[in-house]
Structure formats: C-alpha cells, structure tokens
Length: 132
Image (cartoon, rainbow, N blue to C red; front, side, top):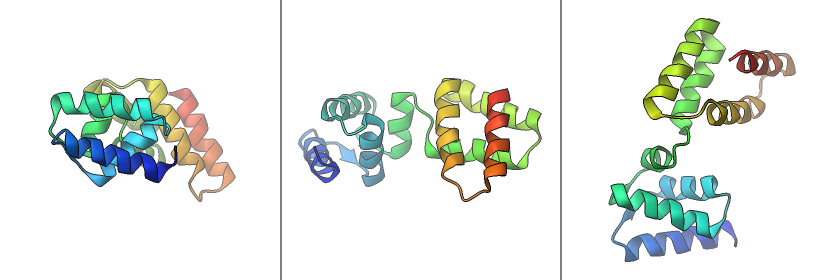
C-alpha cells in the first residue's frame, strides 16, 4: 500500500473513532509500522486507549520507541559533551522513558549516517556509540 493511501485511510479511521490525530503523529505511525497497515492500526488502537488527541510524542511514548526529540538530545550530547556526560544523557532518557539501549543506538546510528559530517567524524561517533 502506498504511503499516501495509508495516511488517508489512517486519518479516515481516526475520524470515525473520534480521535484527533496530528499530522506528524500520523507520519510517525506510518514510519514506525514500516508501511504495514496492520501495524498502523495496532499503533493507532494502542494510542487511542490512552489518548483521544494523539501527538507525535504520544505515538513514541505508547510504542516505547525513542522520539526524534530524544534522539536529537542524545546526538547533541555525543557531539558536544564528554563521554561520561553523553552516557548520563542516554541513561536518563532510557530510564525516564523505559527505552531499550538497542532502539536508542539504532536511531542515533541512522541520524549519524545521515549527517553531512566527514567520514572521520561519523566513525568517531559510531565508535562512541559502540563504547556505550
């Protein structure tokens, strides 16, 4: 199913269920489900059990996945802070949101590889993540 078809159907279902689904939340649901409509519906249902107004942060909270905001904080800490401080940031977010280190590192790795940093900088950041 094409992404635009999925988002249209998702919004249609949310409306039928009297849910307010923010546009970025809908995009996050599709991203987290990898375009699988069954997973899309499962995520929407899980979110609807706790919220009638669904934001992007609530999608990530309900699914137990690190949000883009969390990943940006971690990425910034890896770039700017000393190792121990970056580790503290990761552990604080992990504990506060009950996230797995694997999910965090996987998302940070994607962000590192998508930056315009030099290959040397990417290797440095990936090695810091390996230490963590």
